[in-house]
Image (cartoon, rainbow over all chains, first blue to last red; front, side, top):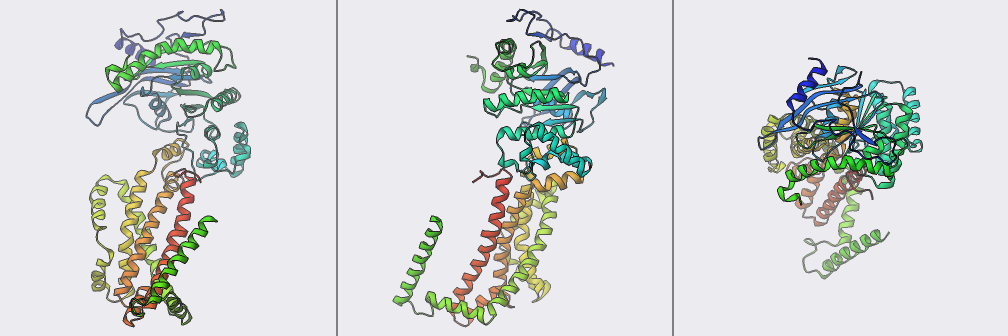
Length: 310
Length: 253
């Protein structure tokens, strides 16, 4: 079956659900030049960098139930695109990144990178974990060059690139520091430099800024946007913060709660650079948030029982 | 500074009370010696080289036995952690064996090896091997998954992953195991030497008893405490603390 056919088959199997692209033009605009966010068209992208084809993931819980974590996920990401994935906690968005990174395996479906199926981890896609996973026994510089060392790059090449990427994240001075000596925001930047230094085509980011204070986060948004523009990487960015997603993404995919599916995709038509406080960003976020709320309620109900929906 | 002062104060008072009690002669001096009597015994012991020889012999046994149990314990511990079946069966057996005081291995050791160095080494190894193995195993299991995931993500495979990620990541746990192993080995060695007569600190302690020389007994006891503390409290604790701070396991001070 071609990807197109599979997509159609899955669309039929989930018929009756509000899948995608059905609420066109519902979003009011502030600037008057077109909607700030609009549901993206259902057609696939041509020659996608990353393509998720009918991804399903289920497993048996300890109580013996079959849990469907991800179901019929189709998602195409263009080369150089900044895609944000939002959803309630527990919807499987982090898991999805792990699948793309090749650290876990899906139950069925395919993850394609440049139309080749992902078989395992590869340095063409680097995941920045929520907990970062920086190596505390190495200095900042050694952390950044770790991927190159594993590849067997020469010492000279490693040194040049380490310096280059540390400069990119403004940490050149901290090359010989250890991770425990850095602040949270600096650690984030080390993780970013470490990921970029392996020169991946795709950067996968799992709620990287969730634990930071607001000022640091704003700063890192700007830096990430700048680095993305400078390096032209494809970025898939997972967050539970809709405003963050609208501020950063070319496109936002909204996921449902258990089973995790892509409920709807939005194109963000706002000029860059954007800021979190922009009225346009806030307005667009509100539209998506309305859709998200439904899913959050579902997740709350699951966790706290039915009286949660007050 | 204040802390050092507190220590000095505490030990001055302790020795003062001891001197006072000894001076009051409630108990006969051959049962309750004075601090300066113990000091003299200590001085004499170092002067006639008997203490130096005992320390050298004990330390040699210690280093040999400890090194053996580290190597064996690493393989055993990592092996157990990698296999669920082994972990449940052999691991369970090891935990129950640990309730056996290591000196209980001495009769077997003497029957197997005779009154040789091998017998005392066997007791030392049996004393520390189990605790090294168990802490290696738990360390390996407690190891945060994130490090190996990050390593694989950055392109590390197989042996590379073990050498560059798993091993350094488990270092704090390994050091905790080593520290515990050292403490157990030290206890086993001294008790082994007390029963098994052939030089060493434990034997020196028993010699003090045989000569009815209470000052020497206390002097050797203090020596054993000091040596144990030197390695355990200073060397291991410093390394452990530094590792834990660096690895982010303990709040930086």
